[in-house]
Image 1 (cartoon, each protein chain N blue to C red):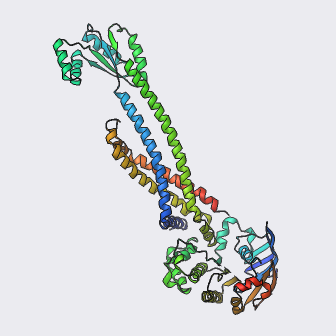
Image 2: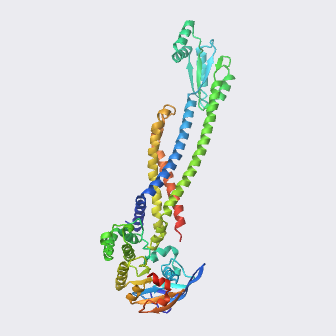
Image 3: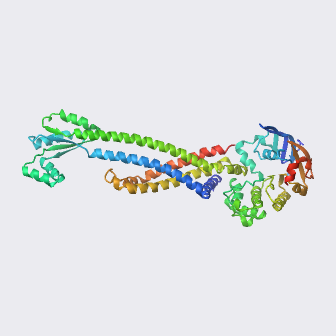
Length: 304
Length: 244
């Protein structure tokens, strides 16, 4: 082993030994760092989930265009193929015939209403096209186009107004949650950095008398400092692992609440599907926080 | 004295002051030869500790120059200070052991920082601990050891790098008479193998018993320097003498 790698290995062992022999202080530091990482990652994950839920709701919304009873099926199908050409705006156009609409209506409503309709003996529903936009923002434009189209006289009704109110509300909620999530997340990240920094500074403060001894015995500043850098990394590693466990617990418990609300199925799937990304980010964030705090704190006591 | 070129330590017109005390040491000219055993005495505040700190470069002189093996300390780059310090073994009144490390780890640390191989360390540390009589306490932490034992660990740590000179600042100040006797015996033994020893102390019995060179510091100047010296009451205030 070369001199440099021998010293690197020794300083790593020093850092590990510090961590072990300062049991309580290390435990407290890792706990604080875990708390910070947990809060930050939880606010990030909840923000992502909320936004996914809203996206998912928007996905399910569509514009329904009903045609007058005298419009033939051939004509409607023509219109359908015409609309399908606007692939930039429209993602799908589905034809729902009178009969299909009735079947769906009967399946959805209670037997009394179903019976009443059968009493009439005639299908009162209209054939329609169900249009889904590529981007929900495009709906007003699509509706406007339909109203001014060549087949505007064939159209009986566009049930967009009620949907529009839902869109607008969802959009507002989405923007608000993103803003609030960002603000809360940033605040917590800031607090987390301050707390972690202070905790590590206290840990190093408790060692300050030793720095003088180490230097007297002939240790270079680098040799004194490196163990604390490693200690900072180790804090980050342990805190990340603990945070992953805590997040798993949270994900497991709120999974039923988010069932089918997001494209991933539920919150647990979202967590498991992105396990390596979340873990990697936490490792980087945690050890960076640990190392930077250690480096700044030690500079203060390692004068020469 | 300034033309003496074989000295291990040489002070040439050294003055050291601090903002609150401009002349802790004033125009000190003194040489210490390799293999000497020198006792440095003087009352508290006479400048003994500053004298020693100047040698291991914890302080720098306000004026004058200090030479180690005829190399001026002022030219040593601050970055290279740790390497210079490996030439000097230091022992203090408060032992200065690392509290989180066992006796053998404390001793080994001095070799580890120098990049000495692990095999050599595992070889040398038990040996030196046996020499200072702590072979059976290698795995004890400082707080599990008595004052005398802790000082012997510190001495073992100072010796393990085979320094040219041992600087002992009041090493027996916190010890009972029996431990004091043991530490002084060890220092004399180390000196008999050729290592220079510079001992700062208050202890009259210790100085009188050693019967070697004694330098007396008083108010920042050397008032006496005898090849076979005795403790001088006049050099030390009454109050200090009573303590011992």
